[in-house]
Amino acid sequence: MSETAKYTDKMSVRHILIVISGIMITFGCSALVFSTWSAFQAVVPEQLGVDTATWALYITVLYLAEAFSAPFIGKLLAKTDIRIVLSASALLVGLGFILISIVKTLWIFYVAGLMMGLGEVGLLWLAVPTLCNKWFNKNSGTIIGACMAFTGIGGAIWLQVFNALNASGMDIWTIYMIWGIAALVTSLPFTLLCIRSTPEECGCLPYGAPQTASGKPAGLDAGKAMKSVAFYAVFLLAGIINLLTIVAQQFPKYTKSLDDGTGTMLAVGVTMATVMMASQAICKLALGVCADKNSKVSFLAACATGIIGVLLVWFGTGSTMVLYAGAAVYGFFFASCVVLVPILVRQLFGQREYPEIYSRVSMFVNIVGAIGAPFWALFGKNYPMLFTVAIVLLVVVLLLGIFCFSKMKGLQEQWTE
Image 1 (cartoon, helix red, strand yellow):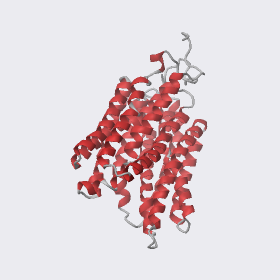
Image 2 (cartoon, helix red, strand yellow):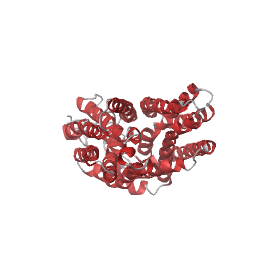
Image 3 (cartoon, one colour):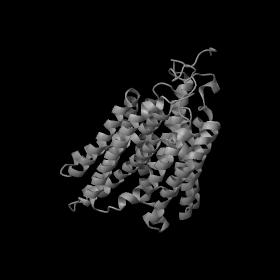
């Protein structure tokens, strides 16, 4: 490695391993936690003898654990060996599933929710953006999009595995044990062996030209960033986007309310959810590629697709194909939460203290996630009001984003190394 070299234009095996590691932790731990719990919801409460709402509180515990641990985990990622943090996170997720399979009582779900929340804040929200910022000066948006796409791809695959195992007559607690083993197998080999905090730790250089001539990360310090109006704007923007992704969980319930007595519309809603999962996986990659070229245009397109998707679902009840199209289009906006938000934070505040700044944003995102389902449930079957509120919130996101982009140049002029 040259004394004067600051970066490389050739992607090495080590760079590729970082990308593969990002893919595996989202495909495994994150998809298993966030994309399959609704399938268990149809079976587990009945086996425990509790109502669905009581059982599902563990998801609220999970989101709150993510929210309040995010600043602490962000500081750990900035100051500690990332292998230790992410491996501990993977252990928490895997052992959470395994505890559920062994203890088989309601209270253990709440304990597991706490464990999984502490693990997922690093694995889903912070690991990929943090690694991309340190390893890739170029094409980081594309890489973030590719990695995050596997939450959707993983969800589609693991749901099919669940259906196959459940249809075979396998005990639900055994499936939880398989989930725990799968979480560990798809993560620990990569977090322990393939990841390093910086390229320099293994004799490599960051891929692509750096922001500064010195090669040192530039940006605002966290204290100054968090005092800016733009920080609060992106803070609100990220939380509202997450709230709007949760509205999609209402699609099956919405189509069921349209049923003419044949029982087919619930199946339409479930298919819409599947279509959206596949769509958002594809759109995460597309959005990352587009954001590398022009993040503002990507953001505007995401907001537009969100509004169009809601309108298609709202007024497309005369055709199942229109409903499926609405779900697919909404998937583009759905993808923005974990792809565009970290890119926007990086472009506003730089890389210098990125993990700490982004962890504060992700804290609010997860608080909103904890209240999202009850919030949309408040509307009951008043779907015109629900969709109206969704469109209003999409317009608020659009205005907040336009404000953030208007402040970007001024903030970048304040960056220091």
